[in-house]
Image (cartoon, rainbow, N blue to C red; front, top):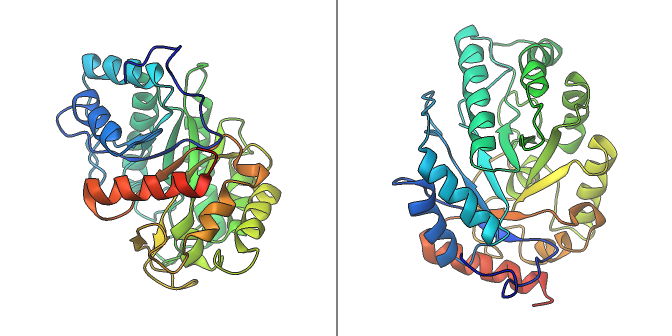
Length: 296
């Protein structure tokens, strides 16, 4: 990733990359992995995705990671831990969610990430959706107000496949969530194609991808879509199962991903895969998406 400006290729309309492992160091492990799979964008964890720990990070690795991404014009993103749920009836979970998301946002800034992806959560304990959204407002709005630096990342909401009492599954669910957070200027969207498909948006149907993207713009506003998790689905539309499949091998199929590259709402938006198959599978999926993107 030490390409000089004169050698660097023009950035594609939609950079394509993957979620990369970072055990051993953000730069030491993550950057070589991204290179090997042909990634033009990267997503990382900055903490255990299934835990509450908030590790400080390694300044040398942070700087090396920032420099490598800047040198190759590679946009970077952080995925916050999966345990975060601001709609939980458990106060300890909510308090830990605040600390965890604050940590991800701070670490995102330290490594030069453009956005931090967080799942929108669910209303647990039998509570009403309105009560859960009020809790989201109480605890997430202050975190957004802490994003005062020019290089702070966006907070990117990722809806779920619709399991249980999910607060956001269909695109229409995002409207009340955005309203609860006053449509903050640092609030954006991460679209996961598998989640949307599983929630009931049939991307494989004629015009299905366009309808979803049109609805996202209507609900959230123009310019809010900042990242796409490009994942095929092992299950049928509306199954409410979050099981990712390799591009073109699932029930979504390849063509809807081709359509993603032409919609006005996706202009400049990177795609990151979270698909099975390890390094070989990731390299193949990125190559397939580049083929579908065209113009190479």
